[in-house]
Image (cartoon, rainbow, N blue to C red; front, top):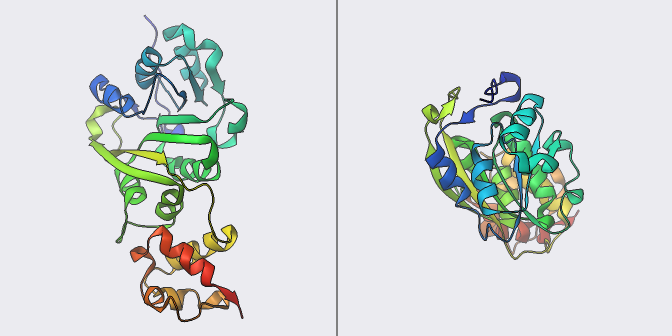
Length: 256
């Protein structure tokens, strides 16, 4: 019998122990038999087991040596497709020749960083199916309101986001102190932003960092003139705006 991996607090490891939930998560992947799949942080392979049953193109990336040794024994066919390292440091362009899908029970302490990396690599990623802290999952999926934030807008600029289901603490070992949520991100048809990319990011960040102010007041520090054609947007708060609204504001910005 293979010795179980001991969860390491510094890596934020909480191993999912419910096979039915694992099966449901894997089932969310579109066209699973046809796509290349990258699993982040497989741990003891509860998702991996179901992935390799359905797909010939599964690669995993794991930072924990103990987990890597466990996976090599438990799932021998995976041996040559285990990348030892930190997902945040890996060049994703070198893993697959074509676009790919990401799946994982993501460490909650780096989940936002994972999503920012997804945003930066949007043109090579077709889909993400991920387990996050429930609060983070709800924020990423929020279309408007107090839960909406910088990450929501950035991700929704290039992905359709669906909140799929919640998972209770007792489905993990050791149990986390928070509930978890599964979200699915599917690449949309937007190839590029039809505005200045840097200014778009700056406007989104500036308005959400002063989220209690109206757009007009929060953007005063940028010394830009937005004209009068979008006054209806300038009197709103960031949490009320869509991606298209932010693009519209960016395109109306002129240096004073």
